[in-house]
Image (cartoon, rainbow, N blue to C red):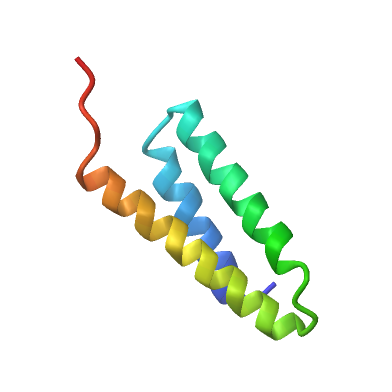
Length: 74
């Protein structure tokens, strides 16, 4: 695991710590697992790691955008 990947996973955990909603945590976990399963077919470890990092960036960006425009429940 590269330092960049560790840093990205840490950033995701930090971002999630701000939102205790179990459904959100479950969504992130399931999304990461789905990406990992899809990327497991990539033979080159470096390419697979880069693709995984890109997936983490996508998830992080989605969470950041969601946090700006959070749904309001009445």
